Image 1 (cartoon, helix red, strand yellow):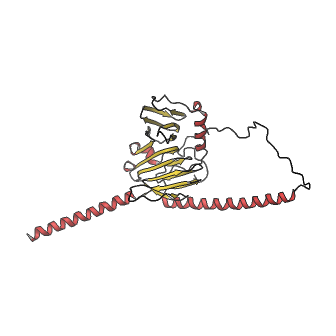
Image 2 (cartoon, helix red, strand yellow):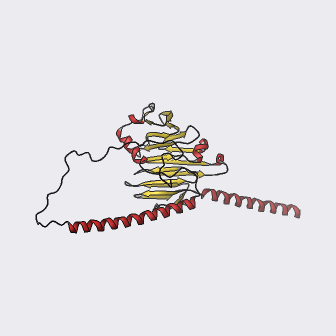
Image 3 (cartoon, one colour):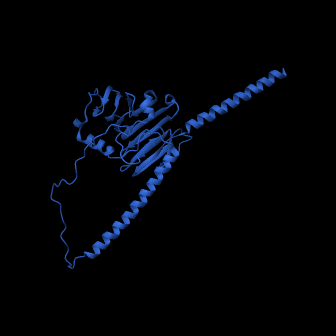
Length: 316
């Protein structure tokens, strides 16, 4: 009898240890870092929204900040942000955009166990796959509003999408590299390949994809703005060192910009003092001729196929 009681106690203790171990493992996975903020322009708010009890206040995101699953990032009217994930996945958000990072797990030794989930809630996003999206298509889930985007072939993809915040309709999808499909509430576009765009309107079946050159000028301009952002290489990184390096580079850039600004201001002041006119009459104001086209028209940059998805620069 005593031996039986001891066995029951040992079983309960063993069960409790297993439960604590499982909780520790799940907690570690739940709180694992997914990526870091690679670059910021303008106002970007970041907020963790895993659960009401764990929800944190929104804070201003800065370069080098790391984020976990269940984090929402929002850009202001002048905001842009580049996010890099552990597996190399890169996301660039345009102005007035919101993105939620869903469950994310990167297992470098077994990509079949890896998974990535993101949701574009509003605005514009450029998405470049990392190792997960290039090798584990089933483990990659991308939603934009109420539409779902699937990568169709191994090797990855580079595409841009936009969501109307009022209707949650996907406004368009443009593919630069690879091949995707889009499932909307009105039907599915089974194949959008590099150089094509797909668009649709509420209540209408999606049309067949068309060449990007045939897209409306406003779509071309929006996509060109995202393509003007230089992205880092979509290769795996150790998050903490990569975040630290991004922070140091951002600080160096800020210091250099401040020094250059001071030097330019001093030179301008000296020039102004030397060139003060000797007369007291008000000078005539120079005017540009009406209709002067001094701003170049936006153009969609050519894309050179490769793993970087249009990346340039020595450290990208």
